[in-house]
Amino acid sequence: MAKTKATSSWIDVKAQLAHLDRAGLLGLLQDLYAASKDNQAFLHARLQLGADVLKPYKATIDRWLWPDVFKNQDTSVAKAKKAIADYKKASGTAVGLAELMVFYCERASGFSGDVGMDDETYLGALVRMFEQALKAVTSLPPTQQDPLLTRLEVVQDRCQDIGYGVGDDIAELFAEHGGNG
Image (cartoon, rainbow, N blue to C red; front, side):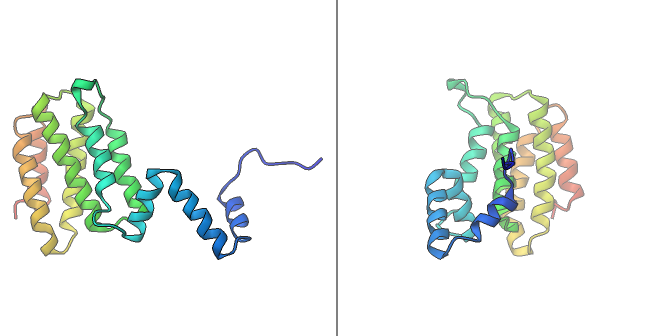
């Protein structure tokens, strides 16, 4: 009796793909594309298709950082951050990543200010993402930095009223990473 593996790996998949011709590969990609919205978003981002490849990633960030409190929806820092990681795997353009990080900060600071968020994990993640966003933005060419830095300055101003030291931490990061011009 032949032994069979309990789990398959990329090596096994790759070996099977080697047997497919062009039509077979295109058919497989078509089936994967049709199978889920995540696959569609990935392929659109990877191939830079459509007017706004960031839209599905932003929708995910928005859902998990600014939930509908009237529907008892929860927040999830992990799921919001996963959207950024998924985009990075799909395309990962520097400007796209910076945009998603800034958007994350905008949504998290907006929700915190509007509903009085007092979850230290959520707020700590906002501060850490703000730092990552600043680093991502300041690594872009100067012409791409200005609009994103302006948006981060709005986030900084909004965070002054949040509490838990968030405003002070964000102001310090903004000054430290050259966000003050």
